[in-house]
Image 1: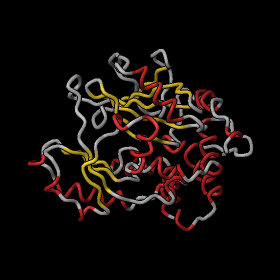
Image 2: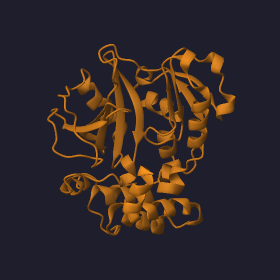
Image 3: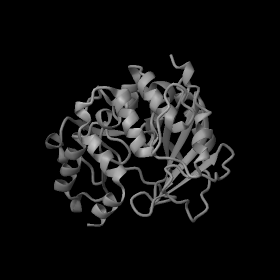
Image 4: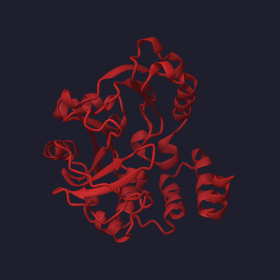
Length: 304
């Protein structure tokens, strides 16, 4: 009832949900994005001369389409792609790959593991097992099956996902002895090889917090997405911060924008994922002027 009440208070949210339901029947990507942008941002999408980060990400969805992007967002295929650029030591070990939940070889999985759909966005389609004896296999299958029905291209027009092969992978569970209760995400917002800001996601799954830092690890005064709070604790730079900057630069070179995600586990670096469109460009900034400032970093006219 509470969720229904929230929807009724926000007609734009209702209309956005309706639009995504009829998305398969709207073939014009530009028209679809113009409507969705208005419903999400409450303003007109300017594509002829985009200025903000949100607008430029929508422009890139339509005009920056390279075949390798599908590999880069595929959580399984990206492993080889990344290894060829920076080395295999930064890749989370894969335990198994399957086409559907019914194919998973549960006996082959260790006591602790992570299951992911290869096309899922954010935390969608991620199942974490910390104890196989108490693991709810039926719930995991439902979660993965639901994720396999998701189509990020159709619903959000993120082109890299249009021809992605939907699969399920099992990976080793990353656990840091220095921080056993939380594994922060270090997400570097990179502009043509320049990792200008690091977004730190902490306490995921409980009371999630989001903080941004510049290259000198100075805390930044903005939120993105706009609705998440800063951490109440002081966040120290990861011990491998300089190396993360170097690796993020290598992986993002030649791309107008790319977010490169890392984990630090026992002082070792592991790649999380590569993302072209954080919150699909609809997350918003608080204060709002940072949307304009981030937009200035993207030179969308030089895409090739």
